[in-house]
Image 1: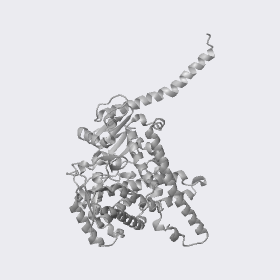
Image 2: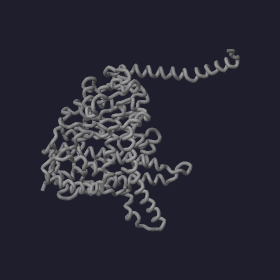
Image 3: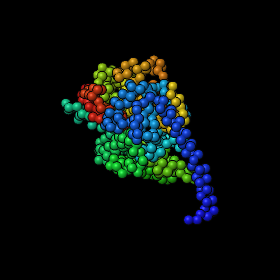
Image 4: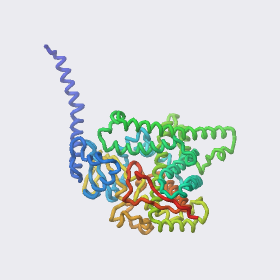
Length: 524
């Protein structure tokens, strides 16, 4: 067959274009990949096998063995080691403040790991999962919602919901059998976040609906699924994950949670529009009627006001989707992490009756028989504050966080390559023997002022640290101390499981697989 000169020229042209466009890119990718593999090979780790990498032990065991396996790696390889999640995703794991310090002090290494991409369907790119300009603008917008004056205004809600919890626990205190207190704590905390940050009174504890229970179960399921998926590289692509039974259940859970948060948003939006209408009619009582006083301005009010405000090109600063992703983020982070901290504090006080009685004596000295309404007096509960912090040391609500490394970073004698996933294990960092000589012992004296002054700043980071620290940590501590103090004020707590009997689940939040089993006895 004859080939014309034109066809030859076109073929040569296409070849040249392909070479110019693709070969340099391929060479660049190969060069970066070679550098990545070379640096990862120098970091301690176990032998890798094709396709799976060296995460086979994590994949082949149930998730309740995750912390045990990581503990073995920490013991075997030290405070810095690597795990290959499949053939391409290299993750570096650290469990010492000496390495974490470099990350927390950086304004470069603030991007969340690709693991958080698995949360986008649920949380979108809200404050937890966003990065860059969007994260900075959201952080700036939402910071005023956690001002000290606003938190003081929330104390009344903390006390009211704690009182409701105490009434519900009263029936349990008359039983001889131990019971799991964790679900009651979770319901109380969800009740609190709905009325404070979301400005919507849900009365969840008094009337736990099937919808409420489904929402809480969905959060737990999606959290469990996220770690499950991360450890299985073949489930990373959405189109494959969505075909699995777990993927379909995950998506159904997300739909349920979105419906729940949409109900909260619409309720508050309706009140906001009523408020605007009352203002236009000159009614000066709208703040009192609707509970939207400045001192009690809810987190969601800031979002809704931004949605009605005009930004560039006269478009709303936030869309309805923007509001929902922040509401979903804070509905999760605002109740789940705090409920975890409360539950673990209750557990540890139930294991240590002497400390529990000292806390009860401190409460009597400062509050007497009064309710814990004063935030000033609450701040005087120094022993209780130390107990909560010690609970967060031993059982951090968020046991690990992960970042995406965009530039090479030197950690000790090792260089972590760009594009690596970096996992910071607070659960083990808080158990550093050099910092805490008896790392597994419950010792609130670890948080005496003189002990804290001697400690490196990043040896204890239950709320993360640096520019991406938890925006709601003061809210969480205030709520935790109020709820725990209310329980200790009324009941004696007895925990019936030893730490060795606990089965820990390091999902997005640290949980006990079998709950927190306690007995309660009235103090009077």
